[in-house]
Every structure is written in structure tokens, then in C-alpha cells.
Image 1: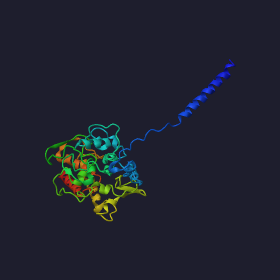
Image 2: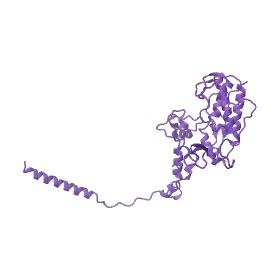
Image 3: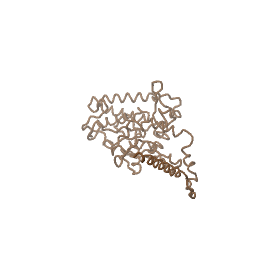
Length: 348
């Protein structure tokens, strides 16, 4: 056996050397084949680098917009977890695109979306469809027919209005002072975004009273929502694609009034002529009356039950103004008319 070991060792070494030679031979390139045909030119005769460069240039514009969006409520806060058929149309990118393609007007998508993603670039823009600046065009920019009836045209703000509008609670279209309305659950009401309706002065339960239900100075503002919400950004805290209207500065909130200066030069906050103070006071008074009459709880939830139309309408109007979140900035005339006329009717 001892005489066999040197033979086996030599054989093994020979195999290793042979394998090495074979593998080293594999690294040599063979002759190249003929060159392939040139690819087709991009749009307008641009090559690939020029085509992509129309948007992806050397600036930081896209990077800045992405950072702003990543800090927005659209991208954070778990909003896109609302992925059932009744919510996905506005709470997810996939649902919104489904609604835009189907032409639905009630914001209900075809069903829950698989692997939902937040509202983002591909929600509002036609990203990578033409590979030209046309991809930055907005989706849903045509005039919007409200879910509860009526139409609005807020320019570029129409994209926003598709979702930021009141939902049907079964009271709009009924006649004030006639019949009854059933509040079906604590979550009954116009939903959490009545901004487009407020700006258009349409969609509240208009109980007759001393104040007229009229449009405001922002109703016909060119550019709609984007004029103020997407004005010059303050870092990633407000404006631009972050879209918030205030930011934190040394521990206190500061209004991002950049988009307001053209009309309100020198304005420093949004309580213009005391509007927000007035509307907040009216909301507080109406809330106290609704609680006293057993129509609302302390958490702003409706108390289920069947009520005279005007009482259910009072709950609806309180929530309509509250869920607009602007305290009258969007349309102080309409907000004040809804609150004042509702409160007067409740206290009769």
C-alpha cells in the first residue's frame, strides 16, 4: 500500500494541473461576430442618453421632489393600508390608476389591490409612458364631477379634487326640514377630505338662514390647490411635493405662506382678518350644541340613530367644515354660512 501512495499523489497532481490548463484556456476570447444593427432612435431622434436626460439631467430637481414626497402624508402615515374596494381608489397608487382608467366617478376601485403602494409619482403623473417631458403631465386633470353631484373645475387642482371631496352620506339631496335621516354608524358623515367641495361652495347641507351660501375668493383661483400647497418648498417640511402648509421652526409652527404672497403681500399666517379664529369659535359652539342634543360625542363621532333631517344635517355640516381642515381659509363665506345657519336652526 505504501508503494501505491506516491502513484496516487502524482496522479492527483496531474489532474489538478490539467484542469487548471483547461480553465485558463476558457478565459481566452474567441473571434467576435459581426456588429449588430443600431437600435432605433428615441423620440425626436434622440439616443438613449439624450432621451433619459430630458428628465434625468444633472440637476437635483428630481431628487428634491422625491425627498419632499417621502416626508408627505401621501407617502407616510399608513394611508395606503386602506386597501379594501371602497378605499383603494384614493388611498393607493394602484387603486387611483384603476379608477382613472375605468372612468368611475364614485372613487370605488374594482377591488382591493395586490401589493398596494402609496400615492406617488406614478399616481399623478404619466411616468415612463412616452419618455418625454409629456410624462410630467397630470392625470385626472379634467373637470371633476363630485360624488355627491355637481361639478368643479379647479385647473391643475382637479387632480387633487378627484379624491379630496366629500362622500355620499345619504343626506345631500334631501330637503331641509322634511323627513328623517338615519345616521348608520359613528363614522357617518362626509369623510375625511371635503376640500374641493368647500372651495367650490358645494356639498354642504344648506339649511336656509341669514347667511347666503356663496363662493369665495379662492373658488376661481388659477391653479387651484397647487398654487398654495405646492409653492416654494421649505426643505422637506412644507410646500413643493411635501404639500403641507406649515413647518416647525425652533419648536413652533410657521405657516408656509409663499403661495399666498401674490394676493396677500406680507401675510405672515393664515388667520387672515381673524377668519380662522372666527371659524374655530363657531365650530366649538356648534360642537357643544350637538353634544348637548345627543347627536355627537366628544371624539367628533356621530351618535347613530334616526333623526329629523335638519338635526342629521347639523352633524354633517359640522363634520364637513371640520374635515376641510382649513378653518375657513379655503372658502370662509361658505364655511361661515354652513355653521351660522346650522347653529341658528338647532337653537330654535
